[in-house]
Image 1 (cartoon, rainbow, N blue to C red):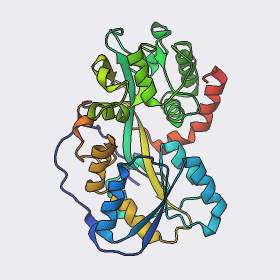
Image 2 (tube, rainbow, N blue to C red):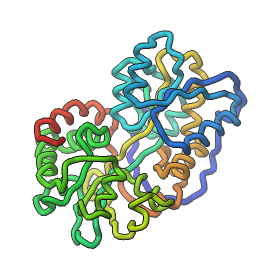
Image 3 (cartoon, helix red, strand yellow):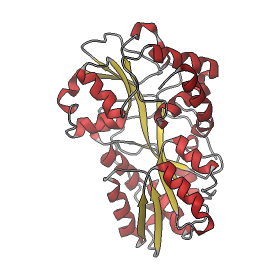
Image 4 (cartoon, rainbow, N blue to C red):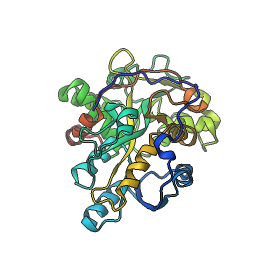
Length: 342
């Protein structure tokens, strides 16, 4: 599996590759277990069915519940594909033994190596940068790196999600990989010391905290902010001009990226259709829709971005191997517990 380094850029060039090998007619069905809860994904499924003739049967739920269900079903599981959000959950599915390794020249060629599992049990299909947002009226010099969030200068200003959230866990796991466990522990303690309030709510709530004045600085995935640029989000869009943003660590490792991806189920009864669907998700058509439909960054380099995503600008993405980051999640949770990050 190749490993590549690249900048994630806000290109607006038109993608030229459509379905590629997925264009060939197929038949049968595909049983999809998905924890992606976005209505816009309906277009992904309908386009795949239209192109291939394969009917998609969906079961939706929380990631941990779906993984536990697949374990309980064992060899009798009807699941062909597991789709979920965040590297830690993909690795959790692998460790639970519910995925299988696959060989696909298409996926190897299109999905960057750092967004693939080392054993080809999962592949990333879309990304979100986890970045710093701040109140432009109150913060003249916002944090320029994740490390800066622990600077005592920002005491009483920072809002963040809880330590049980996978986005929090994966960010700290990446800091462990990039800076070491001791530095990660000091960082976590410093951020706790800088909290404006106890951790609470989702990413949109961190942004709303800036509007309400509870926070001066917060962390969120980019697609929550881009969505509020594209359409009305209550208690956020009307005041969005007051919010500035920083892609952290541009002089160092780059901005941390969250991953949405999937893998073929260990006992997939429709294995070939499952691989075909995975390859479809890496096609330019599907990749563009991840951006246009859900304000995400494509996993495949060079695919066009939607205007709301492109508006955030160019930046350097962290090139860390997300398969390695996922293995640090248990240590990250221990650090959170030790420093009292609720």
